[in-house]
Length: 310
Image: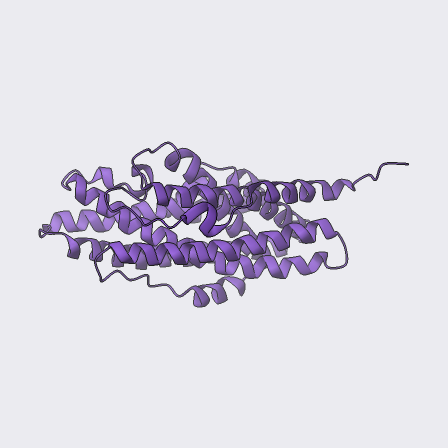
């Protein structure tokens, strides 16, 4: 009997499905395991929170700064996975009557994103149990999703690919090596990383598929959309950084000087811009993919727009 030969264009999706099966985990059984967040540990590493740069803060205050940022980190991922899942479901329609392996890969992607949303909702609940009242996460996930999904699919996939790739970079560069982090928070980010690793592959596959059908003018308009999305992300970061810096300062047992408070405010925004924008540009292959698709003229335009944020 002759072996069945898998079509070449299906092979990456076959690998994605296999990786999804290997990485599969269950929220309560594998990750949470009845644990609570430990207030004696940092949630985010210094390389992401930048709390170690605040030399006028005590070790405990720096740790609390990382916990505030970690709580917003969980909320931010719950937010972005709302629009990512909606877009993945929309993209899966392309494969309804075609490549069924690709369809399975995207359905698995969607299922995992729904699980991640629940994971980060649970983390928000656990963080709330151990932190003082007054914290607020200001962006509304549904409102953000509506704004994002109104843009071209090319730009949404570009943003999604960027998010997935910087998630991987955060874990491997900063989170995994740091033994001082909360064991539960670190486990959450490790299990999240396991499934995001194949999501990044699928993002790129679908992004390239869409790009292959665009004219130069359509691609230029898609770049406009991407830059608008980056500006919207930065608006969210400015809003949440201001709220988190205010909450942090209010919970301290001492009053910060005006200079110290200004430094805290600047550092929160600098950390958030690095976490959600800069790290994806500096430490992943995202620029290689993006600039390879759009060409020199559009690349220069993108770099000029990103400059002030980096």
